[in-house]
Length: 296
Image (cartoon, rainbow, N blue to C red):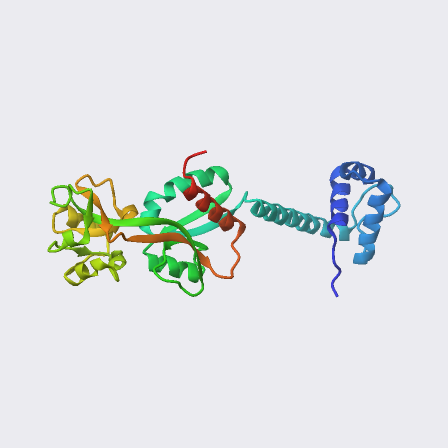
């Protein structure tokens, strides 16, 4: 059976050689000299070989001691480094959090969330990815990321969902479209319009506005392409408010008041799997920020 090396005797050996003797080592380690000598004797007995030459009154390493010294130093340094890193991670001073979000959250909410997070936790590395809702869920399920912020269309086995906010659905059209001047719209007012379906159009399924989908012959999943079609005046679409890109001056968002439709956005993580300290800090931060996004 291999001997188990305790760290204190190793620190004593390093202090004796670095400080120039037993007395100086005792002072450096805030121990008595007999306690230092006892620790070294116990270590030598444990190893079966002397570490210091006997009888010359000086702290001179034996050949075996010279072989052990750099290895003791490496072992002590590795222990201290692991201890510091573990404590730093536990105290949220270090670590990494991998998170995925749908594009609308990435562009509209994450800048503010991350700006305050890196201020509160400057030692934590962040890896943010974005993708459609199914991709975000899959990345969480496979462990590629620890956290996701997305709209979960239906309960999914293996995922825990924490609701964060409700995102109202409205109509998006060009600023010169007849619908652009309305404050809100009833779904019947969309009859006869050229509706461009997109990835969020499933929100209309099961609602009184579902018939609109049956008469739509255009589907565009990419937001850049969808925006280009809308700006060209080809038709209208429905989008959650967060997904509407306000920087496009020629487009207008009009609330759909009847039926009132919304998507639920929330945090997802793997069910039954503990989060790393960094991810747990991010989860708490996201929830607190969305309750009160006002900078402190």
